[in-house]
Length: 198
Image (cartoon, rainbow, N blue to C red; front, side, top):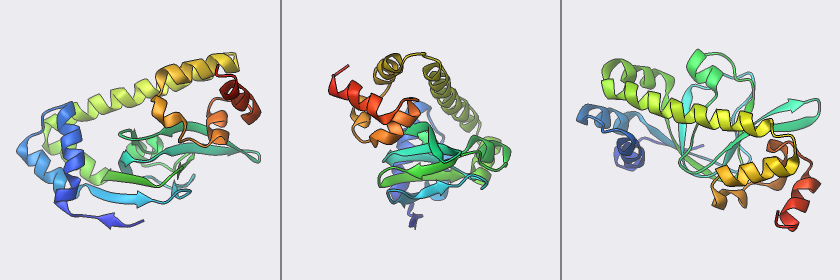
C-alpha cells in the first residue's frame, strides 16, 4: 500500500472539498500537506474487524465494501465507490475497534486524513466544522437509505430501490456475490433478476 505525500497530487481532495464549501487559504494549505494518497490492490483488507481505523478515506477511483462474518457466511453491509467517503465509524469517531472488515473490490485509489489531523482542522479552521457537518449529513443519509433498503420485504423491491438510488455505472463493477449479499438475496435470485431485465 504505497503512500504519497506530494502536495500537488492532493489537489483532487482540495478541489473536491472546496466545491462543497469554500475553504480558507490556511485550510487548503494544511490539507495539501497533510492529506495522503494510497492505492489498495483488489482484495486488500483496508481495515480488519478488531482493529482501530484512524483514517477517513475519499475514493478517487475504485470500489470498497464493509462486511462481517455470520457463522461461515460473509455479510456485505455497505458498498462505496468513486467520490464516496468511507471509514469505520466506531474507530474514526470513537477510537474503538471496528465491528466489520473493509475490503477493496478492485484496485482502489484513495486520499485520506488521519484522526489527529481531522481534529486539528476542526479546532483551528471554522469552515472545517461546517464541512464535517455536511459530509456527515451525506454519510448518514446513505446509512438511512441502507436501513430502508434492508426493510423492503421482497427481493425484487430491494433490487428496484437499489437501482433507483445507486450510480448505474457502478453496478457492473461489483462482484455479483457481494451485491447479492448486500441486497440480502441469494446470488441465483440476483442472477434471475438481471437475466430477466427486472
